[in-house]
Image 1 (tube, rainbow, N blue to C red):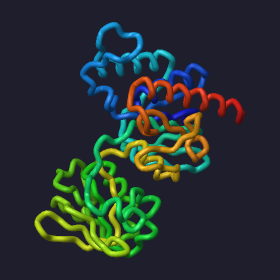
Image 2 (cartoon, one colour; image 1 turned 30 degrees about the horizontal axis):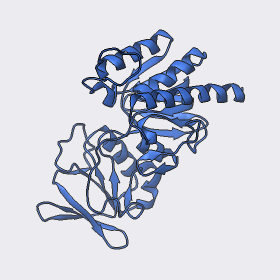
Image 3 (cartoon, rainbow, N blue to C red; image 1 turned 180 degrees about the vertical axis):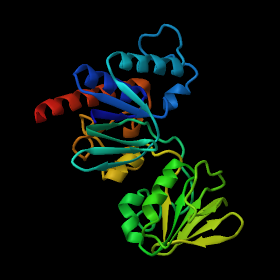
Image 4 (cartoon, one colour; image 1 turned 135 degrees about the vertical axis):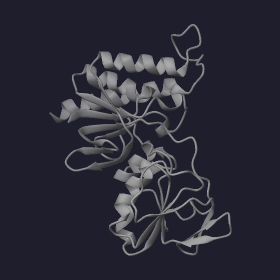
Length: 286
């Protein structure tokens, strides 16, 4: 177990790790890569660089600096987060525990734009199978996705739902899916119903009856993870106070996932703020 787990190895996560590790707290960073920063061709507006620097180069330098002060790195996709006397981070490769957690995986730049999805949130559309599976006992549900995240949600639904169908919305399935789960690759045009979700309609004119639609699109970002554990969300951003604390004690968020200016400088600042607050709280609770 680590004292601190940071989900995400972008500017916010790495910045925070420098403060927690230098303060003597065992710190583990879990990520699948450098995210949006690693894709930037040239950065010309960041302090300290006379010449443009690639996002990949800047990210690599940050990670090496963190390793030099003792930060441990784990490569893996985080698919869930729970709390049982301590935080439990669930990844495709295993689980990791810590007393304090920082979510810093950025924010999704794209999301499925499906008519009815937003309108039926809380009325049949859910973003957390672990949270809401109980309400769909004996009912027909669908999961929108095609990867590990979707399979994780399916696992929570299978023991209670009458049937589970994976809707890939035209994408290919990238991971093994339990044999009792139906797979439908048709393109989705809308989620329909009256007071609650009743069906999913497809581009070929067909439809599928459904009592619940669970969104597990792409990879679980910071906002999705925060939502799973009950932290306050405002649209697509995590609500934090001036110290980057969420509404869940011990859970912090920093970087693009908190909204505002989507810049490296802002992410680094928020990471530093979160890191120092984690250290302060840890000392306070000893």
